[in-house]
Length: 366
Image 1 (tube, rainbow, N blue to C red):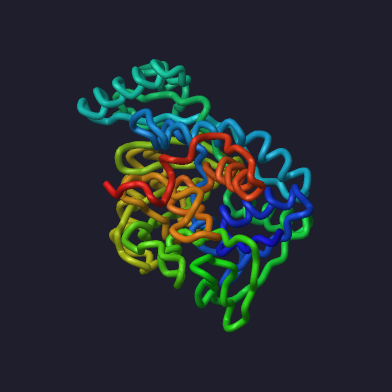
Image 2: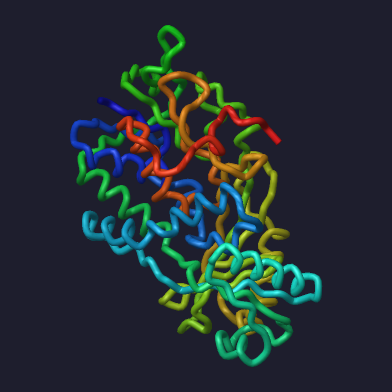
């Protein structure tokens, strides 16, 4: 069997690596530049479903399943690639600064505990003991010890190496469209060259709706710009992921701090703006005031694939012969292991780990 994957970000690479566990499956990954050059490398690397999900449902279910797989996924990836991905079980604190935020945070801890997620409401001296560098204006926090992190750029390097070692073929170029015969997709047009296969997997992130012939509505997978910046400290001042209503901070072991992220419907414009960076800096110093003296070492933006119901598209696409793995929005890094697993199961004709009906492309739009 030959599988062609359109997109060489974290989704495409993870699926390719998973598929090559079966050496009878030939895999070709198509990417317009270098693997992971877009949203995957621009991400912060939070593995934080308890930060991200505001209620129980299919998104939380998917994220929790993937979070459970991350330790094994990281270990096996490092073993095969010999590239460290810096998976770190750091835990996280979601911070409240106002009475309304505090009430919402208490309610969030309550429902997390009701569904058996580790979550603790903390205030006062207990909060300062967890993270002394936090702003003293913080009213309270929800402590999520199971929300972790990984370094996305290291992850992409490791996935590319592991995929290549396992026999994945990489091709660069522009996909002009999908090839179809008798209304079934059987390959792609890559800069005029016809590449034929048994299945095509579309994992092109925010660009998925632009692939001619896929029949993925661009209105259902839209780019959302996220601006980011990096600060550099001599030594870490806090160890946990920190999140407020205005932004988040991801501390690295080497003293770097990633601050994010804006959410802007700006089309495919990747410019970094004064307004965006100003918001990030304000959010950063609100959480940890001492960051005001930290040098800004880098800034960038990425385009994340948004869907209106904020659920990814996984599984059968609009056309026979086409599978989808897109629309993960800002949880792409987190959802890489479970996406690779279920797409691999579909390709091999196995029963999937979870029911994919909630994530199918044919679901009603909200």
